Structure formats: structure tokens, C-alpha cells
Image 1 (tube, rainbow, N blue to C red):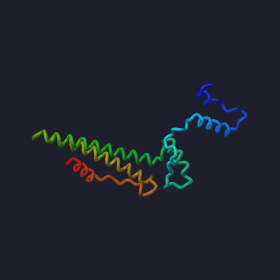
Image 2 (cartoon, one colour; image 1 turned 120 degrees about the vertical axis):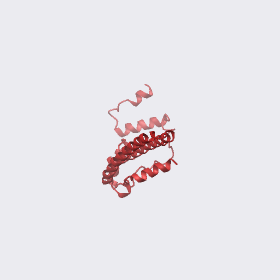
Image 3 (spheres, rainbow, N blue to C red; image 1 turned 60 degrees about the horizontal axis):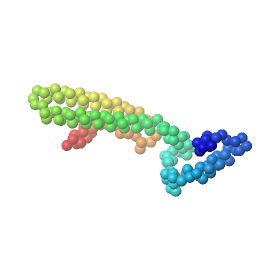
Image 4 (cartoon, one colour; image 1 turned 60 degrees about the vertical axis):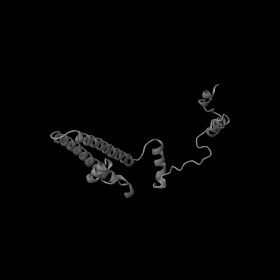
Length: 165
């Protein structure tokens, strides 16, 4: 019988689960299967959430370990991603606008300005939608310290200009 078959062997009827599991662990130790584990000899990391009441910790651990999270946390991540995406898109369009503005004289500037105005309007509509999402998120987040700030267009445009100087 090879090692793989041994792992998949059923528990004998005359053995308790505890004894059978102990035998499996002992056999794996003897084979050296635990010798090169990462973090060997170091304390386990404290993964507890200090902001949760003790009675909610188990549910939190189960969600986290299964790759899930609380809905408002996921919404917060989605909002952050939307903000970054909107900013990157506006940044790319602004750089294009500046480059084209330097290349085109006279009457072509009017058309270029209209395109840039359309880009700004699209950005402003996205910021409005993001701010609506932020307001809903802030109603769900459990503490003020976790709330997100509403985006202010003037500040967004100042950020854009200062990053391109």
C-alpha cells in the first residue's frame, strides 16, 4: 500500500475518531511531513478583530476564512475601486487633452474643448453616483471612524491639476 492509499483509508470500526486521527498525525510526523512548514517555531498570528464583540468573533472568523466578508466592508472596497478607476480615467483623459491642446492651433481648440467638457461631465456624473454610494455605505458602517468622505469636485480637479504640474 502506498502513502496515498494510506491517507484515504477508512477509519477502522474498532477505533475511536480521536485515536484514529492521533494515529494519522503521528504517522505524518514520523514521515517528516510537518518538518518544513512555514512559520515553524513562531507564534500563530493574532487574526482576531479587536473591534468585534467576542460573541461575533466566531461568525467573523468563519466569513473571513471562507473568503467572505461583511457586506458593508465589500461595498467599501467597491467604492474605493470606483474612485480609483474614475480618477485614473480622468487623469488619462486630461493628459490626452493637454497633449492635444499643445498640438492643435486655433479653431480645432474649440472642438477639443467640447471633448474635454464631455469628459468632465462624465467624471462629474460618476462622482455623483459614487457619492450616493458613499452615503449609503456610511449608513451601514458601524462607526464614524469607518465612514468615507464625500468627494468634492473642486478638490478632485485640484488633485488632477497638481498631479500634472
